Amino acid sequence: MLSLIYVSTVAPGFRTAELEALTERAAAINAANGMTGMLAYNGTHFMQLLEGEAAAVDDTLARISADPRHSGLVVIRRDSRPARECPDWTMRAFLTPLEGAGSATRLAASLPVNFAADSRVIFTSFASLPRVAA
Ligand SMILES: Cc1cc2nc3c(=O)[nH]c(=O)nc-3n(C[C@H](O)[C@H](O)[C@H](O)COP(=O)(O)O)c2cc1C
Image 1: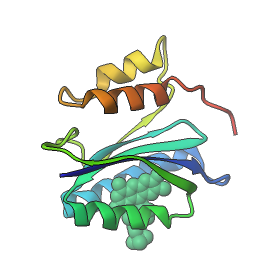
Image 2: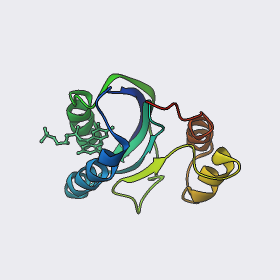
Image 3: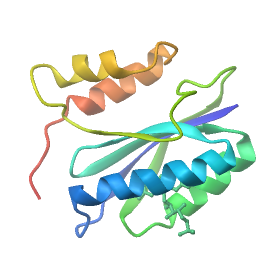
Image 4: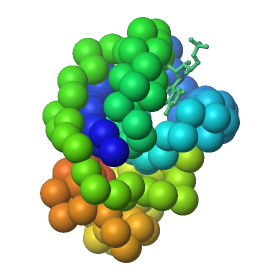
């Protein structure tokens, strides 16, 4: 099982209202490719976890990298894992920071139980970043 996390910069024209459609389409394609993961979006950056068979992850990442809705994609973690961290999410999006007190704490509580400790730190750190108005 290949697992990777990347961050990228949201394209200037991208609107928050587009996130749901993007995620639905991604989830449908991922379901057909045996891919799972999660996506966090804070208005200026994306952070996404992708997991699946190596060929499927690489193919998906190639399509995502070429997508004009973001740029400057950097893979910050890529390794082989014994099991999926998001087995039930063909793709689930989180708009961060989450509303209410303690976005990082709230995101942590929403993550699957088998989410790895390092992934948890990476995503909760991202969730603690403020949203910058476009
Ligand atoms: C931030 C972001 C995350 C995406 N995540 C996925 C994903 O998990 N799976 C996927 O198939 N496409 C994802 N996409 C969409 C792909 O970039 C692409 O539009 C889609 O795979 C269809 O590919 P095609 O336009 O070459 O047919 C994502 C796009 C963006 C901007």
